[in-house]
Length: 120
Length: 109
Image 1 (spheres, rainbow over the protein chains, first blue to last red):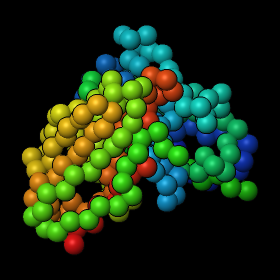
Image 2 (cartoon, rainbow over the protein chains, first blue to last red):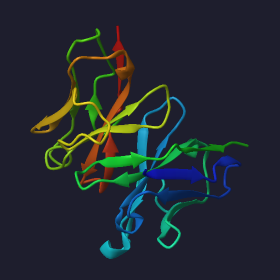
Image 3 (cartoon, chains in turn purple, yellow):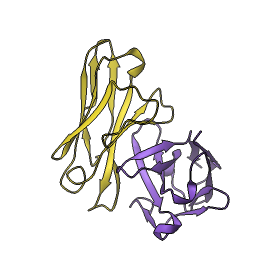
Image 4 (cartoon, rainbow over the protein chains, first blue to last red):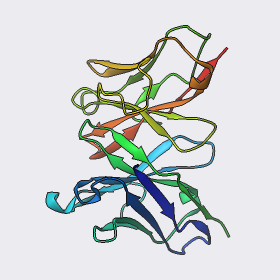
């Protein structure tokens, strides 16, 4: 069974940092392209960034609102995806989902999400 | 302002066929496949269609299509459990990122 389990969310103050983790199981994580997608309270889904598989150079791309403040990385030996967020803003408050990308130009499997609240 | 445009709300009765649309442009839907995601009561989204493929466990009353820069998700034989928010997404090569529609709230009357 495919599982994606996010952790690391919580309450932080503006300007602080937070690292989210996503533990994967049930599929070949090493070959997977992975994304983070977020959803602010009462709002729609928003893509945050992605990381390709190591065999596809492991390169990253980030959405404009977070570029320069976040880093996505992966540890294939631990089957874990990470999202390092720095200089957090109140508008970063959202549920953050870890998602696999399919070859059909779509997202496939979703985690249950972890809530990040940025507030003074 | 979402890159992809979806109806804000759609409703239908049990057993009816409903179609949700997702409109983009030549930088996104015009050249890439589209995914559709179901979100019930603000829980985690679930993929109900990617490209023309049904994920495992999704009933075949769900189907997807695309024409030009508009994609559609059709639910044939609407069921009460289909009531949810539905989002579409695809890659955008001018933004160099994934884009989503604003979501459609589907109500089953």
